[in-house]
Image (cartoon, rainbow, N blue to C red; front, side):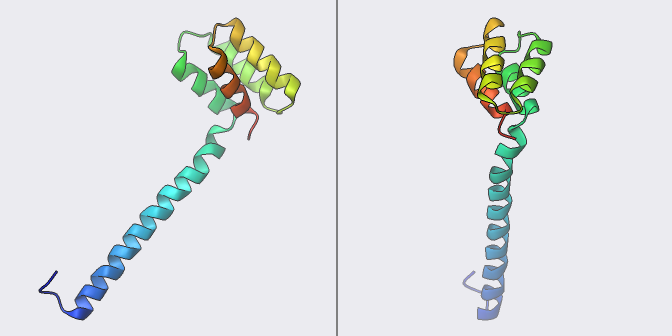
Length: 102
């Protein structure tokens, strides 16, 4: 960069700043959107299946849909349903809560 003129250097720095800014916005946007995308019954379903693949998929789907409205009773029902399938307690609780945060 030492052989570049002042105007060429400024142009290059502006481009670099634009690229870095674009990357920051892209990654920041992805981080901001990720919780919203995962905070659904589908996010709950996939979270459980990824970490506990031997569980009955129909039971997980029903449990996650049950918790979707966010009421404490339904989150508790989701949790109990997942625990009956031997889903670890922490995973069941996180998944049920995730389902209701849409």
